[in-house]
Picture (cartoon, rainbow over the protein chains, first blue to last red):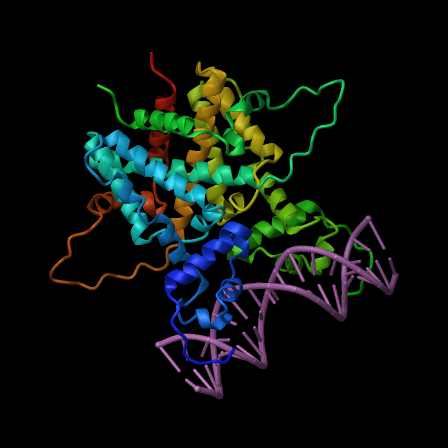
Length: 212
Length: 212
DNA sequence: ACCTGAACACCGTTCAAGT
DNA sequence: ACCTGAACACCGTTCAAGT
């Protein structure tokens, strides 16, 4: 293809292409060169739209978080439900885009949407009656919980092929009996269901919001 | 230098060299080539010790987590203190090695030490009177909390130079008033103190362990 | 067993040049 | 303004070969 002006490709097109690669081939495969190739461009052409790979990743994070805070902005549902709506929206966004937790933990997290998310959670806890500082601490704890759980889930998903244990007559006593006894919960295989996540988040909320 | 057998370098030496690069130049800089160069070796020589870069990273994770579970294994302190000891040990290890949260979220997390950590937390919650399933859920929540908070802290640390806001006469009303009002807590700048972290973790524990 | 050197298929980014 | 092509200093990994 010959050089020259072309019908413009938008920043959003580039972010979309990057997400496609992220989901299909993982975070490490999201290279400037691969994204450019997916769009039929030369790597250098991308630097017309984004000044660096980091700037592209920041744009990806903003798109990932778009609308999450708004899930709990409507003041109609009670504060607890609003927290669940925000937490679930964040969790679902991360879960819907394989590899996105690596993206989130790869650099700064100070975009506008990231702050919107923090603000919405603090507001919900303030509506629950918490003072400003406690509401901020509770909101931080919820963000840490959702992101931490997503990180643990991604780590579980990255575990290679389960090697079928050869049948042995004598079983070694396990060093992790309690962990293994809880395997059916699916916590460390990323298979916990939505009800279980809701229950755990309710426990965290209960800890921060004193019942009177 | 000429090829040939040399006084052996150990796997631990390689892991140590890798940590030095991680802390000084960040996760992205931990390359097989850079680690080899730091040891005066050729990249290919490292493949004698580790079959892949991933195997080296897994060894780094195991070293990072070494001893963390043991911080709360002694049955003498009460269960709540044991949880704090484990959580603090994990947090301190991550904080002491800049870039290590990227390491932890870069791949599988199924090593022996990782399981030791999970087991120790579940055991402490079981001592608190929780049933096996609830203890597992509470232990998972604590792990998620510490790792999620470390991820948020690292994201805050990665935020580039704070551009001093030019003095303006008329201030735009902020879209994040509650978040900004809580800036003094240092939550989103990775500067929360140990007492604040302990308080927040106590809230989480309270949510899971019903007071009677 | 442990190591080198060459090679392959990749990276992010810069620069001069084209239209 | 948008794009190409060449270039630079890097990657992880494999392979044949040395001692």
